[in-house]
Length: 355
Ligand SMILES: *Cc1c(COP(=O)(O)O)cnc(C)c1O
Image 1 (cartoon, protein in one colour):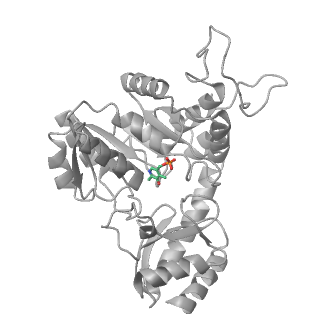
Image 2 (cartoon, helix red, strand yellow):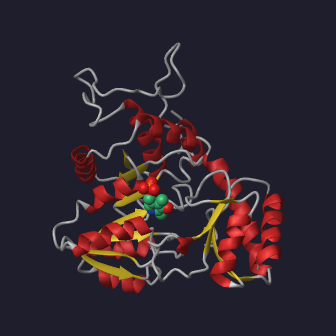
Image 3 (cartoon, rainbow, N blue to C red):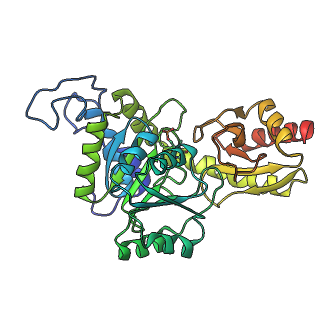
């Protein structure tokens, strides 16, 4: 063991590998098994799988806690919401991933929780709402509006009030934001995005540094059965090996493209929180122009999802479930690792043709 704390890049490359034995593989094998020999960590494939362990170890090491993988980010979110006591209050951002808001609205409609929606960048408002809540759900940056929450201040106040704080860290990744270090109790990921990074996996995770919470979440996973596949966790662990390199490159591209978009007369505004790979912008001409433009680009793919090596964009309100508070013309642009000049030419071409 090295005598100093390892940097996140080194952890991303090295954590979660099998012990080095002569003739053994450097990567965790894909274990396809419903039944395992009794006496180990798990004897049934719904309770545990060695390939999950590899992904959970590297993600846990990066976030500074213990990770549990789930069938999707949505399944991870659902398991966490299941821990909220009956009729208790949940505070959540007005703008958040729409699947998360759908879950919260459904639970509120059934009378299972009280839902309080807030502007997550209004720290005092969130702190006041947290006073009487069981859980504050934070997304930061939010999807797709890119608001930023003060995780440290909210966590400190929530902790005094005995309120749990969970942070959806999908957009920032543990390389840009470590919510557990900032005082949050839970981190949730859609590993379908940047962690996997190649648009070929649906996977989620919850991370916590409380042993009690870990046991409760693990139990929810087994009871609900929303478990990951061995293949998915293997792909995600492989994706994480290059996370820092992909993120550095895509982020540099995003910074440059945000600068150029902001300076363009065809753009109403471009929003970028200063880190990460997502830009939100609106073009002159509104929703119709935004729709046409995103469909007609050549290098940038018209597609939902985000966080892959390839650049994608879409007009978010084309999804009927997206909250109406998101502007009709808002384009969510997930910047990839292509050459930035090629991306800019693609953007200029569609802007010239439609905006
Ligand atoms: C995609 C996404 C989710 C949902 O994750 P899935 O893996 O698609 O279920 C949750 N939160 C954010 C911020 C996302 O972008």
